[in-house]
Length: 205
Image 1: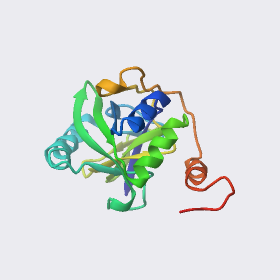
Image 2: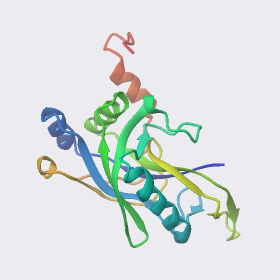
Image 3: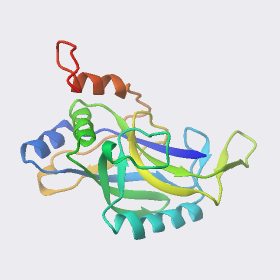
Image 4: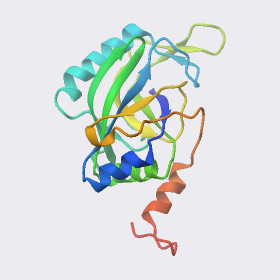
């Protein structure tokens, strides 16, 4: 079973424009996952299980500089390099929050993500993993089980986790911060189509 967990955020336009103008990667940091808290999908990730998977992720993909993620979740456990938009450079804990430092890459998907940010579009960062869940609380809340395996974090259109704040990284990105509006939903597919197609409606992709 494919399990996903979303945290919404938007990026100050000035940060994106500065990174593009100076030909530098856009890097942000903040909450990317939360343990022991019910999300909008009614799912709870036990901290013990999440700690185990985060440690494996740090010791593997992060350490080996291959902690890649995609723009939008595919219906697959495989990371498609054609759709990679970012690389997670660092992961650590702050209480029950998993924190991350995320570099937006200058790939086609990464450039689309930057353009979404520049237009003030709210997207989410979302974990992708495989595992099972079990209803434990009698109120529709389900708990992720011990067979959970963390695969990566992707950027997606629909948020589900309560407030998280991210801040820019790097000397040239100190003027702004990333702010999280509550439950703002965006049709990312329409925005992406507008970005990659010209004003005449003729698609150039």
